Image 1 (cartoon, chains in turn brown, yellow):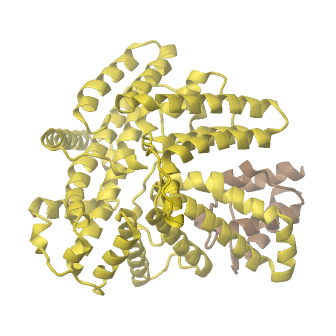
Image 2 (cartoon, rainbow over the protein chains, first blue to last red):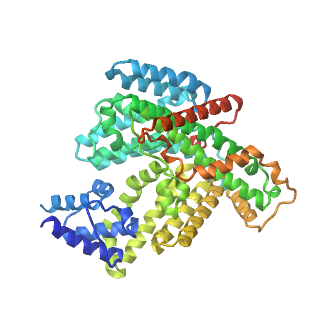
Amino acid sequence: MNRDEIYAKLTEIFKENLDLDEIELTDETTADDVEGWDSLAHIGLIAAIEQEFGFRFAMKEVVNLHNVGEMVDLILQKIG
Amino acid sequence: MLFSSTVFLFLFLPIVCLLHLLVRKELKDYVLLLASIFFYAWGEPRYVAVMLLTIIINYVGAILISKYKCKKTLLLLTILGDLSFLFYFKYFNFFVENINELFGDHIDFIKVIMPIGISFYTFQAISYVVDVYREEVEPQKNIYKLALYITLFPQLVAGPIVKYHDVADQIENRTVDFEKVAYGVKRFIVGLAKKVLLANTLGAVADKVFTQPIDQLDCMTTWLGAICYTFQIYYDFSGYSDMAIGLGSIFGFKFLENFTYPYISKSVSEYWRRWHISMGSWFRDYLFLPLQRALSLSKTYGKLSRRLGRRKINILLTAIALLVTWFLIGFWHGAGWSFVVYGLYNGFFIFLETLTGWNRDRKSFVGRAMQHFYTMFVVVLGFVIFRSDTMNYAWHYLLTMFGAERGETMYHLIYYVDRIEIIALIVGAICSAPLCRKMLEVEGRNQLRIAAVNLWLLALFILSAASIAASTYNPFIYFRF
């Protein structure tokens, strides 16, 4: 799976979990940029990503994910 | 030793700065460590031992965690050690008093005196062992360096709560240069002025109101007291943080910001991302997120999510995690029920905002104004609970604010404020918005502007120093926690 494919999947997960019609994710997107990405949505996103890609995040990863770019890097590393 | 005391400003700080500049690079850590222990021992000689013991426990704990398989048990034991000190020194009195109250018993006990700063350095210690456990950092082999992280005098007694992974590199390697020292000095003066000129002045008003028996207050007076306290605590604590960040910079450290204009927030959630950030993020990283995560990985979660649906179960577990976190945030502030209520009160609004989406910014000006008004309303009322010694007092104070109760014998408003205090209130309100933010930035390099700012800071320093010399009222609010 390459970055673009991961992005496509992530966009779907975000839309579904945050109840948004449109969202554009970039490497620099952070929780502050996305409507409704708060502590409640975060846990849903994490769970959905884990289910979709089939791996577990470690605690330090849950705490230290600063933007979507880092999230994609991590997913690539985990499934690679 | 207070930052805003003459001993600190004119004796301790100059001597430490000079020594720190003069000694070789390898010795700088030791100068700072000795200075920090001296700084602590100045006011609290008997309790230096508790702090040193905390350092040893966490030093050994972290090394064992990194070496052995039973990491989790070792982590929990180390944290238990840290928390048992905190519990004994901070909460023992409170628990015995509550047991006495509850059962009508009279367990006699000698009151335990709380060592200053214990809430802060204990949290730093926990941050260190958890970071090692999560393999974010290597365990510190040199006990003196770990001791420096925990005791560093700029942040020892009232924060910011520095997380180990944020400064691990700086502890190993940092440089001091002219620019950092200059920035540090300026930042320190800004903090000192905030504390001495604004917080102390407004604090005098708030104290006058809040020490008045409740039956001698009316609606206007209670609002005056609450608003003055709201600005007092902001300038007291953010001023302290400025001083700490400034001192850190003088010694080559870069601490994260602790306040970013909390009073411009448009939701309670946003407010807590701007107020005492180092504490909020500590609770988020080391309690809220792990707890929420642990709940979501439990077997019950799977079972319930099939029955109730993902969204509902996520709401439930977030509510549980928020409840526990905000209970403990309240309790961390002090061993008293009004602090617990204060924590839960804030957690309640955050939960409500999360659930309803109120914390999403409105587009229209009126909508945003309403959001801001609502936030400050919650914040000011929250501080009434925070400031009150008992819940009973807080309750009657709030009733008086809303006109449901009214005292009998009252002083005129003029009794509580004079002209200078009114000016301080206006200046305080203006400066709590990010208007003067650019003052410390040197980017423009406009010589005239830099000179003007420096002159202004010098004037602030002289005014603050004069004010310190003339007054006796000086305690920092957050030293109690």
